Image (cartoon, rainbow, N blue to C red; front, side, top):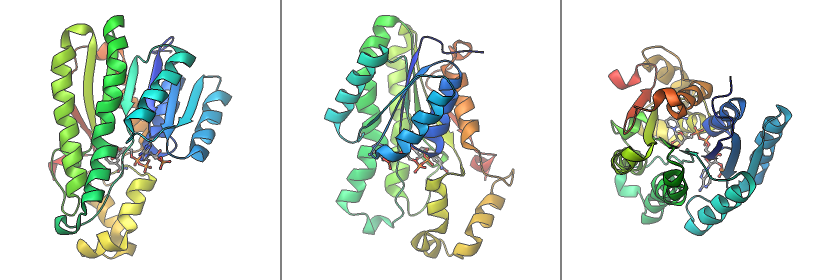
Length: 261
Ligand code: NAP
């Protein structure tokens, strides 16, 4: 099945983790895939995986915090594959710190990476989506974008705001064949989650033994397991498909029941 044959999907932060799974899934469904991150090494690996499976991939370094780099990247993608019809704002960082210890620079960095980047990318691709009368924007938020967690104020604020942006944009483009949705994962077994779980400072603040942290958090999920990146990618493929054309402005949890706790 090739849900996205002839379409171009742009995925940010796709050198590893959830972004890599998104890139592989959209490529498997026939899309030409454009991926970015700050470092080339991981991008090269993902590009090779996609090309080895017979799909098209354009990979380039782009710091999503920098609007000029975003503009240049989108224009390179358009030159290579034509207009972007599916945008997935996935790049993100997590910072653990009590509010009083959040420096202005850290606050700004989290907002620039997790939130402002989605605004920059959406603004770049919306004119061509509007012209085509078809488009999909998917923002990777978090369950922390609906229920805050302690010591992650900047992260939670950025992910809450991402859902606000999702809703506002969905309303603006509702009549133009464009849907805008957010996905809110719980724990997903990636480098970001692992680094957080074993982070000494985070464990100390949460009064958890770092050696037990992984198991404690896995068992805190009603399904007693972490979500897999591939599951997030499959949900994104559904939201980008024509079957999901009536779903817009939503923020959908994929968390093994964690949001109920
Ligand atoms: P990850 O393994 O740390 O991967 C993050 C990706 O974003 C990497 O490719 C990274 O590449 C890229 N990135 C970071 N800053 C960037 C920047 N300024 N410009 C361009 N690329 C940048 O994280 P993940 O777990 O896959 O998370 C992906 C998304 O899911 C994030 O938005 C995260 O908040 C969200 N999420 C994750 C979980 C979880 O449990 N893992 C749960 C809920 C939500 P470089 O470092 O090379 O730039």
